[in-house]
Image (cartoon, rainbow, N blue to C red; front, side, top):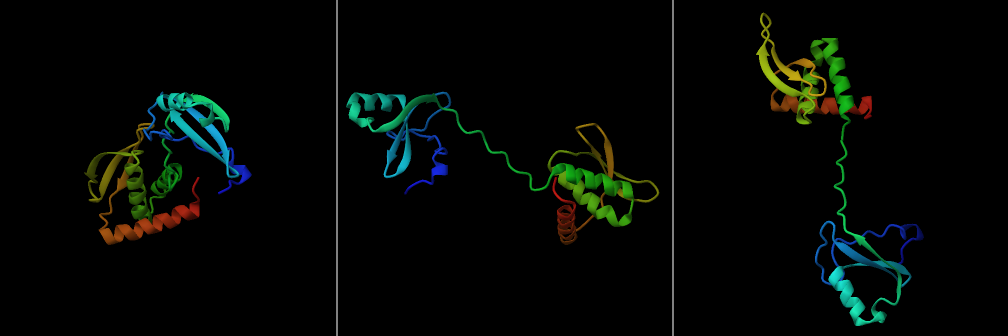
Amino acid sequence: MARNPQEWNRIKRAKRCARCARGFVEGEQYASLLFFRDADYVREDYCAPCRSALVAEGPDSAADAVSIWRGRFRPEPPKEKAEPIARNTVERLLRKYLDSREPAHVNFTHILALMLERKRKLLPRDRVVEPGTGRRLVVYESPADGETLLVEDPGLGVPQAREVQRQVRELLDIEGVE
């Protein structure tokens, strides 16, 4: 199958030897041969012993290579997992709803705080019952700046929590992910 000309510069290095199929280890020297076969570029990577065996077999084994080079194997860095929701948006909304002190926002603030707790952007330090009102509060601390946040725990059941999570997702979509 012929490659699109724009793809010719994107042939990935192999993770294992083309001859013995042994996986390369970090720092190991390898040899790469680039061939043009059937209107397509093909890259083959070899460990040092297999490259030596190719050379011993004679010049014809690599004679049709377009390019030959050596390198040291470095594994690809792990891909960073994309955040489905930007944390700074969640933090901004949490602070906005905490400052509003509206009873209607209690469920939202609780779910937003739980989202940040899961990402370790808020650390739960204590649970207290507010004297006089009986409200249950979760005492959170921000590890970034040491700020303390008091978030009311509305005691949501599972069906209620799912509904509030859905509403929070809609709210985050409206606010826009930064």
